[in-house]
Length: 553
Image: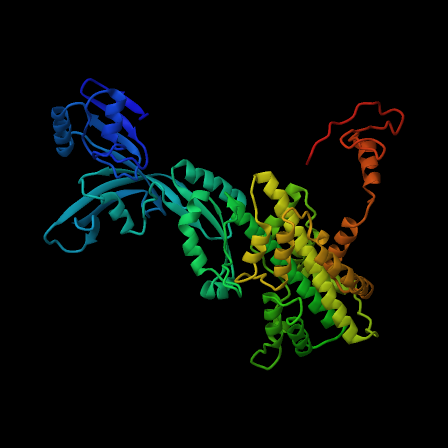
């Protein structure tokens, strides 16, 4: 049924749906649809492009159609257009004047500079009504009615119309709630939205990045061949790009990727500090260590660039890394990952520490003063240096596994919250090439989820269980050395604490629940009763039996 806004004995005003022809003789065209609906002949007065939705006027007789067409041509009737522009004009209101040439053979209209045969003057007035998320809503009044005038005039100024069915692509580090909102907004206007996480930095931009698209599923078939042709490829030619999920799923996965990136970088920095401050190794020695590590399970982009950084010399021949101020910057994606983890109730402890360490590094002046107040010298290391270097490598690998285990747990939890159907093995594949956290290690994650798509935690996969059992002794040795010698290793030790907590049958949260119930009557569950049954104890004897309701926060 066509929506009719106004009907008289001579004409009617109705809404033309997107994708329906305004004129023509085909069965699905507006005149035929209206004739069938009203039981009378219908005659078009003007036109709108098939891909455009809007208000149409139709006459009930040929004579009335001719009269209305003449009135419109003489300016007695005016049409006002609403268009969504990609971008926004410098002036909130104005007039656009151009010379247009319409190529009938190609059905295309062009802006030309000089008058010639077939060139016509085009003039329109516009007013910007609203702006949102890089788009602007324009109200447009035509003085001339040239073919495709509005589209061509705005496009010539770098302000293309967002047409019905068009696909808007955001390839930035957007916060996933914004992408959820933007997808809903754009889809409500009859258009499609793709929120694509892109990773790869400068090199990825030149050679092909990892791409994590989400948004409107209907848009994916159109952008898939483009994205998969420009993205990075792994050894067998598989593209590091595939559909992630609806609305904000792509940007969420990219956010988790960036959180893991924070964790990986911090773990490497802690390994560097342990070798530098505890073992007294030079940058050249550490360069050789990282070069060797890059031929092991740690083979990755971040290990590779660390190798290169440690070998890079300033103009005076000294390592340039030692001249860089130890205050780290951040763009916010690691923070977003931590906030999302808190919202979902997922212990993302390693990545959280990586974010907080950057915050701590920014307190440079305070750290300098505190170091004077708590002056200490790191005792000389008396053990086997080569043995400790290998232990640091193993501790780094074990912690790295924890980082990914936590990140994947966050993605699984969020997928349930937002209704996303994430392909966890496919995500690992997308991260194997092009992106900052690319490593051979990711192939093992893909294998784990290929074997068990419902895997709740990487630590429960047989390969990772066997690997962790081999790494634990060295991991504990490094953590103990860091604590005893006074070398900060917050990410490594947080990862170990998470592992110990996750693999502990009974944590002291029973006491914590007793405390909460004591001061706030928050209730608790009992070991000897079914889950979901809550109890309150009158701990003081005068607190009564009233208990606070349970809640999830």
